[in-house]
Length: 307
Image (cartoon, rainbow, N blue to C red):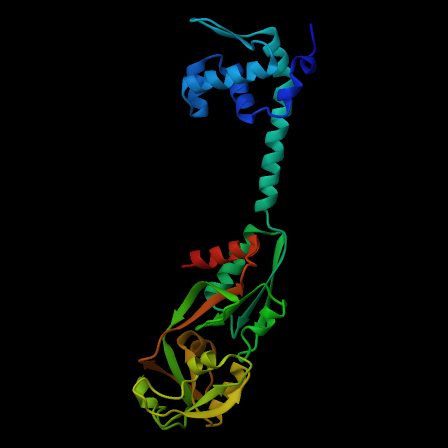
């Protein structure tokens, strides 16, 4: 009997269809066209077509087919012996490659402004548990430079206060939404108020954020006028939130902070008063455009899923 390699026409060997081999292997297991069609989600006629195409490539019949039975021919048995381990190895290779692609390795560098929120910490914990081979490194960002480390490639992503309107950055999940508060000294004339409207900031002084943060971003954190157009005085500039809180305690002005930040920074010499009429404070995960790695996508997904 001729060997299998001699029976395969070399003109067709390079064009063998994996679907034909898959159909052959399933039919060799089932020895029934109907069950084979069901397993492959094909019609019986399509199974017959694939088998006939493979037989033409091989150059001989692979099955004896009658109205009552389907059985492998000697040629079919030889093909099955040769192909089955090779096909199993191919499946293992594909599965191994898939696992490699989904198993994140290396490290993911993420920066954050201020104290990390509960949502951020939960996402870090869940991501790390799911991807033990991909270490998350976290770094605190200065309040006045939310994007610099990202652009210098010192970070893969950054958690920053909104708004973000940078052409080279992608705004990902938005989370940690909280009402704004006005943080002022306990000696401030508004310190006894239970709540404030933004228009009551008219004539008051707000601690400003220094550059290099863009102007629109700094203005959002320390507006210079109320929605009604009244003037808000610009106070001294700071680079970090702690600098701002220190100046607040020294009666140099007020500082807008979200409720969560105010609650996480209790001090006896300052007070935080809820203020209405301003957009909610919110954080966003941002990264450089066209640099969304698998690890970054996975971490962003955890942020989205965090309740």
